[in-house]
Image (tube, rainbow, N blue to C red; front, top):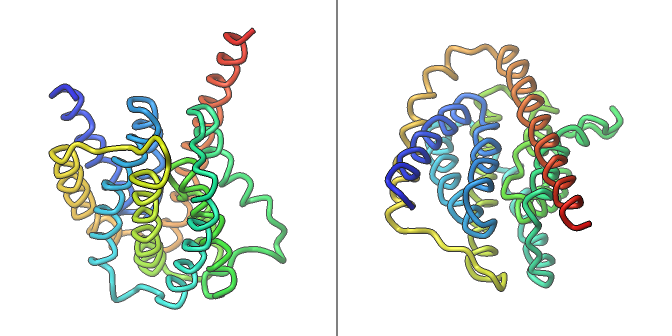
Length: 252
């Protein structure tokens, strides 16, 4: 990578970690889209995994007193099941499909009937979301929108949402590194220097966000989190659709 690209990525990582540090979401979604635009899919997934493990791990450490461990344990069990299944397929999506999946998942979650709305205090639901979210993680690099819907669907406070989701995401991104770093045929790679800079940038952005999260009310947190997710995912649906249409046109 050129020095300009490295500097740009580090700035983006600080910004996206700051956003995720406030809402526990959205930052990884933005970063995934940028990395998919600049790097091959396996390499983008690997660098995204390193960055998000650092960001979520530091965030979980800052708010560890608010983690719902029962939910995390159920989610982790579902993640392991999904990794075992997808290890047999070794599937890596094309960029347009990855972007479409990134954008459509939160809208699909909002169509769920009220009687089936997510409950983060339910262990069976935690395991089910672990399976589904890890599947999305291995296909698109992020689980954010669907996991956001899971945690926003209950009655948890903003600190509990951020702490519990961050802990779940550390586990998901670790499995993603295992998948893209060694299981698939076209394994991705990360420059050690870039990985170190990504970790530093993630910790910096997350630390800067702590005071902002404290200043928000739970109502403000939920309103702005939903707005941000809607805007970002709408963009990815549009971008992925355009790329898919262009590829179809070129194939004719």
